[in-house]
Structures are given as C-alpha cells and as structure tokens.
Image (cartoon, rainbow, N blue to C red; front, side):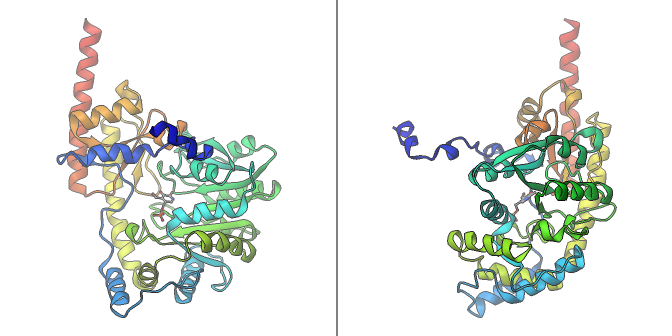
Length: 399
Ligand code: PLP
C-alpha cells in the first residue's frame, strides 16, 4: 500500500537520499551512556543576553509577521556586521534578505537562480544539503573532490578541471563542514578569476567564518569585482549558538536578492520575529560570547587532533569549524563499519565521512562541540576500541 502511494511523490524527490546522519543519531539518542561527537551544533546554550532579547520581544508583544525581507533594524545591523567582518557594504533596503537559517538561504538562492539543468560546482566532502538542494531546484550537481593531502583545502585547479558547459553557480563553504578545510587568499583569488572567466555566480556559505582559528577568514565577496557576482549567505546557528532560532541571511546584488525575496515571500513569508529581535541583539552585543565559545572550541580542537594522531588516526588540524575529520584507514575498516562498531562497542558516535559525499571515504567526522572532559573520555574509549581491533587482527593473522 505504502509502495503504491509513492506514485504521488515527485520523481526528483523520490531520488533524494535521507540524511544518514539523522537516522544514525536516532539510534544514539537511545543510548544514554554514548558520547556523541556526531551532531553539528554547538553544545553551548544561546548566550543569555540573546535569550533575554527574545523573552523581552515576546513580553512586549512582538508576535506579528515582519517585512518579507526582515525587520529593518536587523538588516541594518547585518549590514554593519558584514562590512566589519567581511568588508563589502550591502544596502539594508535592497541587498539583504533575512531567512530561516542558512538552510533556507541556500534553498532560496538556488531556486532563484537555476533554470532546469543548470550546473552547480561545489567541493566535496561538503554539507549534506548541497546536492539535494541543487536537485530540488532542478539543477545538476557537480561535486569536486578535496583531498587529505591538501588538508581538504579548496582546490582552484580541480574546479577549473571540472568545469563544463552549463555551469552557472560555484557553491563554496569554508571553513568547511565536515573537514574544517578552508581557502587562503591566494586560492580565493584564483577561484575569483575562474568565476569571472567562466561567468559563474558564486554562492558562499559563510556559516563557520567566525570559527577560524588560524590566519584570517577572507570572504570571496571582498575580492575585487566579486561583490557583483556573489551571494553571501550567513547565519547565527554556529558562532552565536542559535540553531533553534532558525535565523540567517543573504547579502548580494539587489536584483538577485529581489529574486530570492520572491521565492522566500511565497514559501516562508518571513523569518520569525522573535528570532529576528534576538539576532539583532546577538550582532550588537554578542562579540564577547562568540569569542568565549571560540576559545573553548580552539582548545578542544588542539586536544582532539593531537589525540587522534596519537591513536594512529591521521588527522590534519582543521583551521576552522568545530569538526575534526580523521582518517580511519589504519583500523582496516571502512568508515561505515568503523562508525557502527565504535558506537556498538565503545559507545562513541562519529559520522561516516561518506555521509558528506563519496570523497569522504575512509574518514569520519568527529565534532568537538562537546565538553573537553567528554572529549577526553571519548578518545580514551576510542583508544581501547582501536586496541581491541588491533588485537583481533593480530589473532586473525596468527591463525
Ligand atoms: N551550512 C553549513 C555548512 C552547515 O554546516 C549548516 C548546519 O550544519 C548549515 C548551513 C545550516 O545552518 P542553519 O542552522 O543556519 O540553517
């Protein structure tokens, strides 16, 4: 019967995979002793001053729709913040759209610019929504691999080699989920020249921009000539620990933001007003909170990367994000078996690298958005697990 009902489901939706991460973590939530290094969200609760702003907004009766583009005060604060952090200035009236998280911004951006069959180049391993979002907008996804040899940094030469007629969009995210890979100024300059030569629109997902531990974070929109061909997407979920507020934004040239606004106004109307008021507070007064959380992530990163390497799980030091992406090749298992056995036998949850595309093979994603003490315990459990795996293979070899 349920099979019959699939005739009602659109074929391009039938073809979409379910996010493997959610299924896996439904299992984890049933295991009270498990330590999860799986979910990509801050372990910090939203800073008090931001929660207080939301409470106050509710108390004063902010319960209405807002302008489709978002509350003007928030757009003005976004404009200031983006100019300070990234460089380019955007007009709050015509060049900024407040969205329901970066998730909606990605969806709306792709739906606003893609004609059926238009091709989107992006790097992989990458955030799980990219390929499905392209498919939902009737586009064609062209993943371009990044490699452990390069610390998973964006590789302009690989993008150039992957280009083919019909490519319209270059979708970037750095620091990258799941690898923590990034792109320095030189690489970005070459990517910018590539985008200009091939007349590509760049969609850049800057959600981990603040969580950069080494060097500067350069937004591609700040490079000469790039503001005109870039949609800069950003949000509050990660650096401000505001995942549940579901709030983000897009900045870009007025005609493109107008096109996005049309899609957004019919599917979403506007972002929730309470979240918009809280977000404005985060931008005005949240810098110290961001710095406090970032310091913790930095300390945890240094610890977990060192421990993984000591355990024989070769791991580059991610320059940003809150994810480590070690190779598990030395275990003799593939990433899916490794993750399942690690969960069953050591009660530590990590995500198989292939959940982020085939280029994530032989790796797992371990999020360090969990307390230092739990990271110590998790890596001890992993050490014991790896010892038992090695003992097993020695016994097997001796037989
Ligand atoms: N982009 C990337 C790279 C992410 O990792 C995530 C969440 O994990 C998102 C976008 C979605 O963010 P939001 O909560 O703003 O929708």
